[in-house]
Length: 395
Image (cartoon, rainbow, N blue to C red; front, side):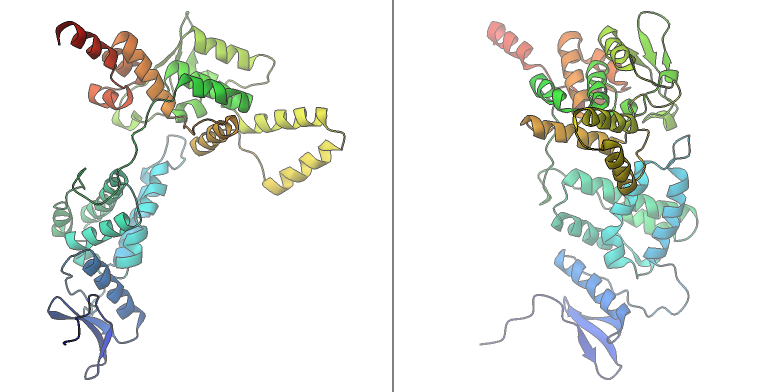
């Protein structure tokens, strides 16, 4: 009985030349000098392409002239991204962090290869590694698009030939039902009873932010950056005009009406508190002080010394909530309340669904600040009660 063929490539020595090579799909692939780190990295690339069911292209280190590697291209693009993706106050946006996360497998498998030799099959191999890491389909598509964007920028800087980016564009995104990548759960509105159960387990700052979002439909980042100098208080309705918002770089304005209920939340929060019109209204530093003051009043030990020790250990507390910290506070409150975990962004879905039920899809889009109703459809769930009523009468 014949010995079964190896299903995976094997790292071998070619004694005549002293080079490493492997047999894949009926041909030898030269990897470089046997035992060298470059040959090992090249072998890892070949194995990744083979595992993805692709025919790898020989791209060993035979090239002797200086060349731009994929790692070097990524580093240059990150320097550009750190300058390009900034808010008006000079802070980097979350896009820089997402770009770094998107490049993890690219650096691991193809970082040593020449950027001009990177093609659609290599990108498909990277995508397969993302699938194996159990990333969801939509996240994979977004991160693959970020990798394409990096090569597009390199093309614009004449670092690589145009043909490289044009070839990468031919790799289409993963489609639902036609890939082994898992599907993410759609973001749903959070029930009001879940919100009400969670509120008592939040500090005053986070509780006010949640209620403000619930009544206005603003984004979590807009609630974190809320300050009174951005609010027009003339008239019965206040108007919140955030200096920074999601679509500002596209030349669009953003105005968030603050109705009587939301205004009542703000006035109750500002009462008997020291606050500055130019600083973020909701401060984790202030929340920390209030928590220590409450604990000190109930304690029998020397709380000032304990507070000072904790400050030295933890470091300075920020004057503004980040979206991540805000999210973790909400999830922690839900856990303490014994209800299903939920996130602040779900409050926009709750508000949109409620407005759509009462006033229609256009009103929901206006509240959320959407210019296209197709985007509002994602946030505002359709009210099936109207369809049931029609079915009863004419169905």
